[in-house]
Length: 80
Image (cartoon, rainbow, N blue to C red; front, side):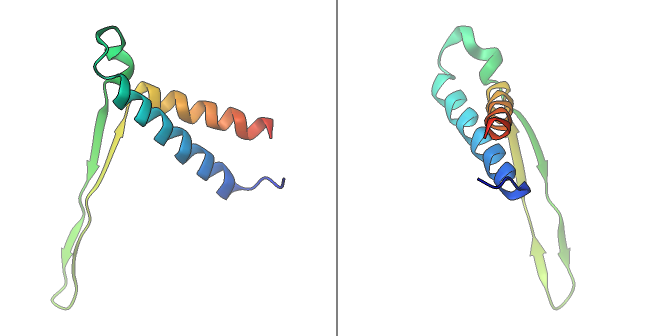
C-alpha cells in the first residue's frame, strides 16, 4: 500500500476518535479520571460583510486517551 499524507491524517483522526470514545465510555470509572478528563479549546471567528455574514464555531476536546489513540494510530501507520 502506498503511504501518503491523507492516509496519515485519516489514521490520526480515527485514533483521536477511538480515544475519545474510549474516554467517554470510561468516564464513570473513578480511578481513570486522569485519562478521561478533557481539555477544551474553542475558536469562533465571525464576520458581517453586508453581503455575506458567517460565523464558525470550532471546539476541540482532547483527553489523554485521545492523544494515546493518535499515537497508536501513527505507530500503526508506520508499521504498514
